Picture (cartoon, rainbow, N blue to C red):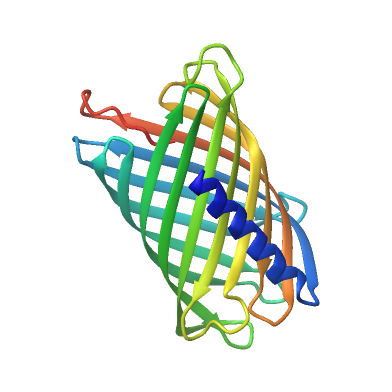
Length: 252
């Protein structure tokens, strides 16, 4: 009950904050393709690998960005873990002179998985330290801006087939993630973005899941009163490998 209250309060505060402004909104379409691998080597230690490709312009016409993440996982309990990782982002800016900008993003996260007889729930709190390369006259510079970002994520998974979470089963999933920026360089966009998603999990087997769905990304840009609203089609593969049989992971 407390979790639901906090989530509802967060949505209401974000809504009030956004509606109080005169907005200029940019619309777009993207597709995100990603692969997330989690290996567990012992009762307490594992690894986190995440590879992502983002396409833009009518969902597929150009490459917008790639993200590569590598990290380590520490399991305090079977359903509670802490993750430390580094994400490298290569963002492509199209135009007369196309150029690439890099972002180095160390982050730390606490993730909790819970389960009821009829659903699974996942939530995490993540803190990011972002080193973003800046551009000067439509060209990458040697300077990097530094900011922090805090993210809260909540996902619900409801089985749709008789056999739950096994080979050939299907689940409905819905999630929301809210982002907040802070740091010296943050002036107008303390609220960064909100990602509201809905889709399906298809279990290729109990350790490999295929996800397909839709995400709406509503983001405040660094310029005052400017926002972007993206329709995103998302395809993902989640892969668990447990090398220590008695330590069954609870990752997704």
